[in-house]
Image 1 (cartoon, helix red, strand yellow):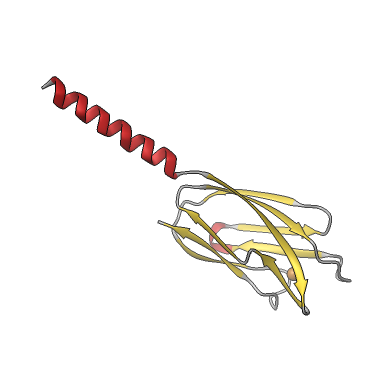
Image 2 (cartoon, protein in one colour):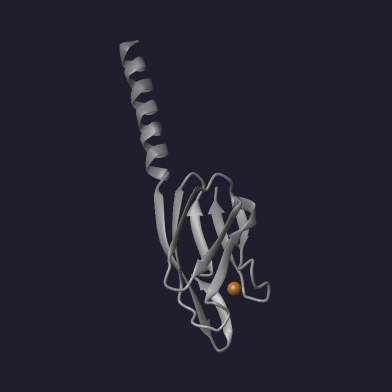
Amino acid sequence: MKKLILSACAILSLLTLAQTAAAATQEIRVIAIENAGVKFWLPSTIVVHKGDTVKLNLENKILDKAGNVHGFEIPDYKIMEVVESGKPKVVEFKADKAGIFTMKCQLHPAHMGGQLVVLE
Ligand SMILES: [Cu+2]
């Protein structure tokens, strides 16, 4: 009986460890650039796991006449930032729902968007 209880405790401990190991902090540098007249955020696809803490370091590297300001939005995660050239911003959130979510510049709808992929 003692053996059984010990085994159950060991399994529970392993499960807890596995869950702890699965959730991580993902720190990702995301830059806005312009190439061939197209402006976009890179990487345009960000992949994380559900439960991860995601820290995005947003940098606007575009030098244009529009005040050098671009937006970064992930509507499904209620993230909306305005990023000025030379003034990086940090966005941190918990990836608490799985799926593929649109990333875009909310200030200029023509800009190419990307996607946040949160794996189950
Ligand atoms: Cu923009």
